[in-house]
Length: 166
Image 1 (tube, rainbow, N blue to C red):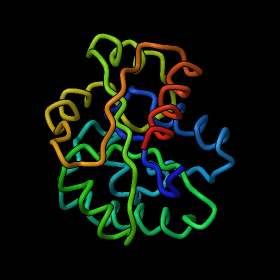
Image 2: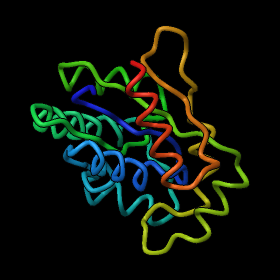
Image 3: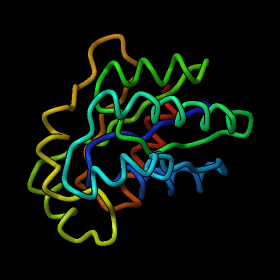
Image 4: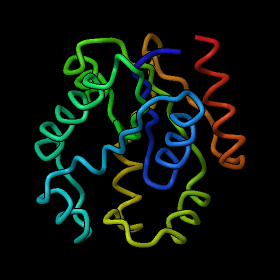
C-alpha cells in the first residue's frame, strides 16, 4: 500500500469515517484535515461562509506537512481536496507521491448524511459551495473515484481494493 493515502470529497461523503476505517485496517496513522484548520477558518465555516482559496492554501500546506511527517509508518488523511490545484499543492508540499481516493455520490445522499451529523462546524448549507468547487479528476491524475452507496464496511473494502490494484 502507498504510504500517503488521502480520502477526499465533499462534506457528507464519508471521508472521515471511511478514512479512519482504512487507516485502522492498514495499521496506519489517521489525520482528519478538519482538525488542522486555523480558528479563523473554523469560525467562517461555522457561520456558513465558504472558505476562499486564500483561506485554504496555508491549511493545505499544514495538512501536507502533517501527512508527510507520518509517511514512514503510513498515513491516511481525510481531506476535502476538491480542486485539482489543491491536490497538486498537497503533492508538492508533501514532497512525495500521494494516492487520492475520491468518495463521490448523489446530492440527495450527501444531504441526508449531513442532516444526521451534529456538532461539526461544516454546516449542511455549505454543500452547494463544495459541489460547485469540486473538480472531478482528469486523465493522468492519480485519483480513484468510488461511489458511497454502500455501508461503511463496504465502502472501506472498495477503497482497500482500489489501493491494492495500484
